[in-house]
Length: 96
Image 1 (spheres, rainbow, N blue to C red):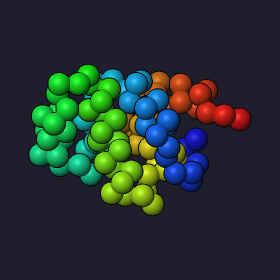
Image 2: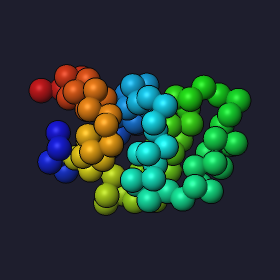
Image 3: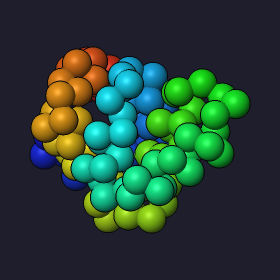
């Protein structure tokens, strides 16, 4: 997973958003989102659950950084930012 160059899919984003915990903002920072952008995602999507806020920031990243937005890149960022459980679950969820 950590070296997988395949672009992220909608299903990938939904799966990761479902399993990421309250430290999601650390992931956003690691993906170069500013504090202002993070707060804007919270404000724009606060009437939804946390999963939607996370999904929207990941979606924004994939749309604005399509060459960087791969399974491997996101897996590495998650792993390096103490979201190892997400990576483990995601790797088990991947088709073989």
